[in-house]
Image 1 (tube, rainbow, N blue to C red):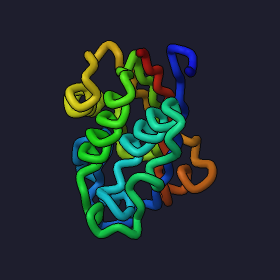
Image 2: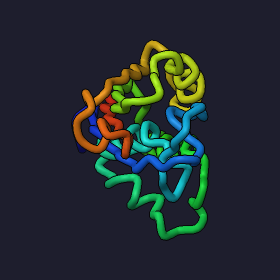
Image 3: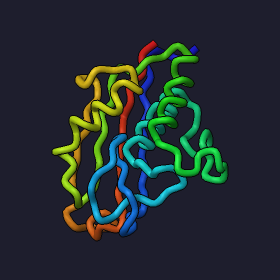
Image 4: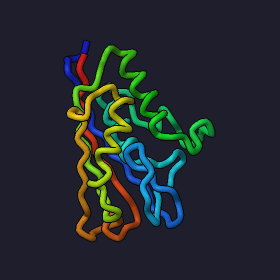
Amino acid sequence: MSAIPRIGFGFDVHVLEAGRPFYLGGIKLDHTSGAVGHSDADVLIHAVCDAILGALALGDIGLHFPNTDDAYKGIDSKELLRKVCGLMKERGYRVGNIDATICLEKPKVNPHIAAMKNALCPVLGISSGDLSIKATTNEKLGYVGREEGVAAYAVALLLK
């Protein structure tokens, strides 16, 4: 039997494309570009899903929700997170806390963090004090700096 608690790390990245809707942290942001993906391409939720799945040693989001399955085409990523939380609960775990960072040049994320927490905390079954969402730029370096993509990192602590 594995030790209690368990920690997992998640990372996700998506290309940004002009004219697409931009979903981030369970909400829609007003921006000229949006992330490209099979689902709604919510990079923050995908990183959180991977962190939880990693803590459970259950692989990654692509294993559970493959981009070849039409059932997940355009799906709201909060639904994927609900399914991941179901897998967690089936194994007797709950989220202790999550720490996440979004890496994006534009738009500014900080004004939207409270709304993201309001969207995600009920799905995760935690209070806003147990979900940290931070944002940073990439100082104009690389694909994030050129505004070609968005990345997110997350660490999840699960408790039994």
